[in-house]
Amino acid sequence: MDTADMAEIEDRLNQYLRLASFPVAIRFVKSWDELPPRTKRPLKDMDNRFTTCQAISMARRYGWVIALGREDNSCVLGAVALGLEKRLPHFEEGNLCVNLYTESLNAGRLSEESVPRLAEGEFIGVIAAPLGRTSFEPHSVVIYGNGAQIMRLGQAWLWNRGGTLESRFRGRVDCADIAIAPFITGEPQMVVPCTGDRIFGQVQDHEIAFSFPYSAAGEILNGLEATHKAGATRYPVTNWLNYTGGFPPAYEDYRQMLDEAGPPGGE
Image 1 (cartoon, rainbow, N blue to C red):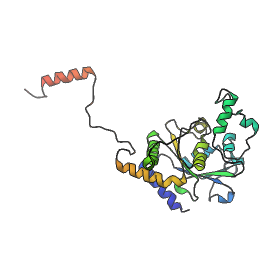
Image 2: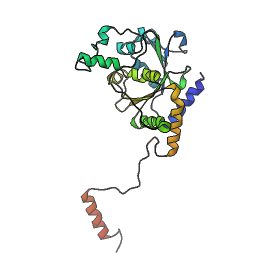
Image 3: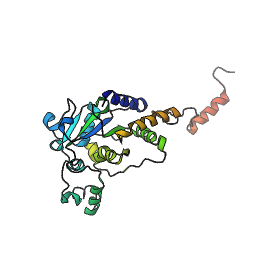
Image 4: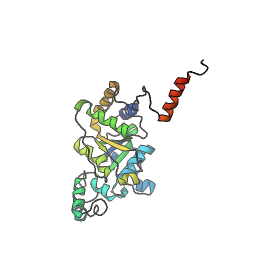
């Protein structure tokens, strides 16, 4: 994979979106030999363990390449979704969800079943890297932006297809929606960041995520360019300024007095 290709994709995304943080390339690895040079492992290199959303945040804010294995992962929910930990009966019953996100154990079970996940043991870890500095082919790409920027990505996806872009919301384990779902489904998603992403990934209140399979990058870029040229949809959104504003009655009354008095210096 040519790094220049990734840099060009990032440049074109920024051309139309003016992003505040790096788009992030995500890849699931089967061997640590796949790691690019200068990749950081949290436990070995920083004496810490990270959540997946924390690693993604470091990639998009610091420009670092972060790889998480089982020993690096601090979040059991994220590790289970990645297939790095087992789904024991206690987990499957909904015990990690009940009284936190659901009222009942059964509702918790349904929530856990809904989370996109990789097969246990299929991969040994995940890499998060800034897209423009990536030397590997990503499985997924995630972009964080404000509502208008993410809207533009959704419009780009629908340029050729029309219809709607469907996304799912559960308010937890958003790393599975961001990293895993596009890889499994081949479809992009708009993702409202979850509680954990706000705490550990330090996502801000104005930020939303958009993730897509890397194979869709060309279609999204073409859609961004085409909708930008069409003029109705571009970022920053063009405000309409050619209008006469309304004012409080006291202002309007005084305007009438001025009209009756005539211009300054007049007879």
